[in-house]
Length: 125
Image 1 (cartoon, rainbow, N blue to C red):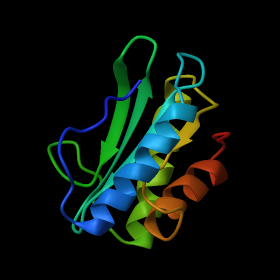
Image 2: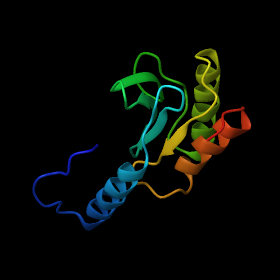
Image 3: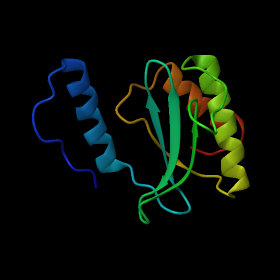
């Protein structure tokens, strides 16, 4: 279970996203056979983690920055590349089902493109 942040969030848009995030995390939980896909985005980059909440471990991750970066940006085309790469890694780890955690972001644009690309490549979300 996720702990609530202490103090007030000053930006109204961040407060709304955080409220959506808490509401989602009450309902979504990842297991070993059906892990949780978490999308994190910034203005420049995109990251997706696959998490087993029961063991509190990150099983794998795909991101557009760092040493093992997928060469794509934070746009819809880059999100499709990230989703396809994520699906390949999940298949190699013998995981074909997952639960999607949009991390408080609206299901639109880049966030939706990641999930659609993973679904097109055979992952059931």
